[in-house]
Length: 80
Image (cartoon, rainbow, N blue to C red; front, side, top):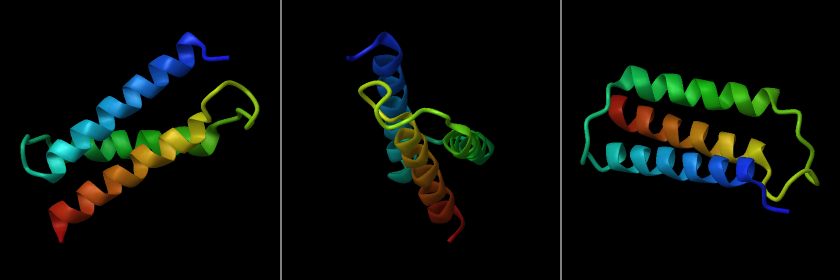
């Protein structure tokens, strides 16, 4: 069953991924420290996630890994 927690997590992740996309295409200028903090926070959340696959409609660990991966891509583009 879709809960409010799952829905808000999905909206938050879509917003962060869109922000990273805008940073990647140079449409906005976000300080790199913010990108690093969001990426590290998401990676830490993914590693510490205790939810199981059958709990809820969405698997939050995958969302956190997606945000961390997008953050790494933005960081690598900036410094390569």
